[in-house]
Length: 126
Image (cartoon, rainbow, N blue to C red; front, side, top):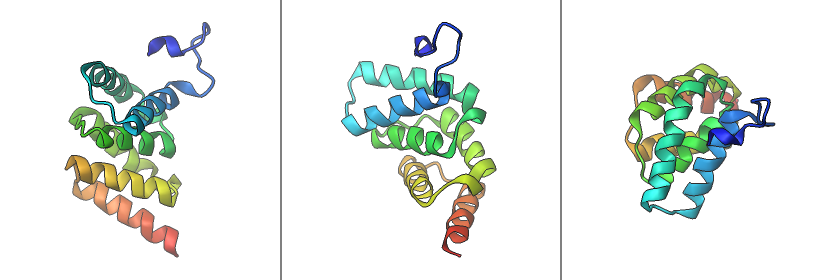
């Protein structure tokens, strides 16, 4: 995963985009073998340390990918949840719904996250 960066250390879309694309793609494929689970654990470990760089699309995609594979990585999901709360105003309707679905599927709701997502949804409706 770390080799996704170019020699100067900068991937064109950044590490968060790479991580979210990997998780989303694996979720779409619905593969659950040991290699895939090992890859997801690596993605989660790296994501915890660069979550502040994630865009709303990155956040929605990474949590959707994990939830699609029933992979409940609480440490990563908690870090992403905090970022969702901080950046909720930047989420579009699809990102809000995918994020809500993913956290619900993983059973990782908390009051602050729910409040932020509901507020984000309401602001998009007005």
